[in-house]
Amino acid sequence: MGVREAIAMTFELEKIWKSYTGGSSAQLGGPIYRYAGTREGVYRIYPAVYMDKNFDPTQQPQLVT
Image (tube, rainbow, N blue to C red; front, side, top):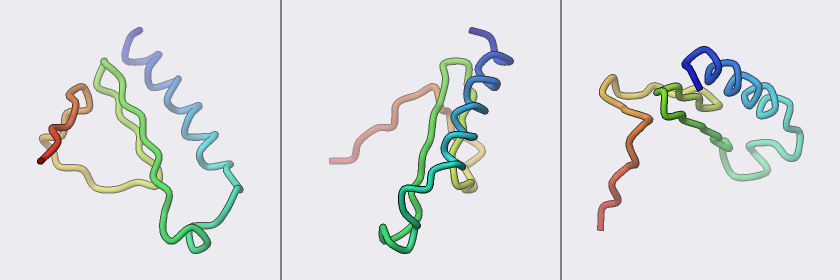
């Protein structure tokens, strides 16, 4: 899959996330964050947040133990 296809695919996910009406943030104790990243480096998160400029969605985060 190319970057354009990954952007189109993740855009469809974002539309689904925005249409969710299963409960409000206040009812659930805060915002519900949804995210998806692709091998091509496309990353979507809803609701939007600032990400560090060095964030790489193609890498698994390292757990701190």
